[in-house]
Length: 471
Image (cartoon, rainbow, N blue to C red; front, side):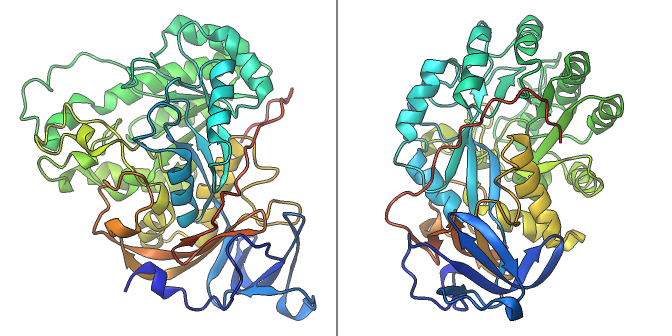
């Protein structure tokens, strides 16, 4: 039995795309508590949250029985790749997959699209391409590359959520990595804007392991990107963050080794945050078969001991949030025929499955539903300054809801994958947590395997703020 057949508790003939006036459930996440409630929706916003006994409205109610209702997921790290590499993904397919996974907001990365979002003109091109194609709400990161410092403030004024840079080759020629000089220049441009700079925190170190090993063995690839590459890059980030007091964020932390550096910098006053991803929490190096290049990503998936350290850091608050880093490509670029990890594209597709991936592992480690909201919705919304409208279930917030059953299992099958390219390391995996329905600003956009016929997502352009908000 697949996920679609398991959501029979939702009793409604409500059409997809229609406006929902109220949602009733026996399990609504109100604050940190799960309780029976009715969420009343008005003008795309949550108007009231009432107990069942207090609700006497005449409107049609979407009754979801015992399914959990909580804020939609905000995935702040998604590579949509449009324009330019739409054979890899695109706004239509990416945002449908997001909706099927209970993700109500995504933030698009400035690469691997062509052109990348590194100038005001390119950002406008991106917005044009995305128009009329988004099934969920979408915000956009800009990029910092050598020589584009004068584009940063115009992009802030145009509404980018912040910026991303690489301290190592990005994998694509049109998004070169920055030098120390570029970083100092960019930091000066960002001071006082309230914007944030995201770092792919790996840097080159002296090593010669990659040439020596069998390229079809995962261990060969893993040895070519050791923990020290992350540690040394994060040392640079912490120094810059302290010096300039510009908000900085480390994307996709895979190694637990730099956590001490991060903690020390925060204690010294650095406005620094850090994320990890579903694949670092769900997959470990010991279990990756030879030639299974669908598991390749950068930084790499590390060992099981390291993985448990990441989980511990999540529990203690050392890691702030969890994202997908959805980075798809066409199957040929994964080099499955040769199984060569050194030549394959590095990136993992998981946008649709982040919620059940996280819950399947987190629930076994004592995490609660309130932790899911904190790590997958509220903190990610704070990162991109959407926390006044996204990521919380409270009056005045956008009525972005995921309806799901955290107790039921399903198996990931190719036919139910909505990403453009179906290759993912999770095919065949059984997960806990079935997404039943997704509501965006009060509109029913996904239910039980079916989508609203037209995309109802909107672009989220961030107003410029003069004060520096910090997590």
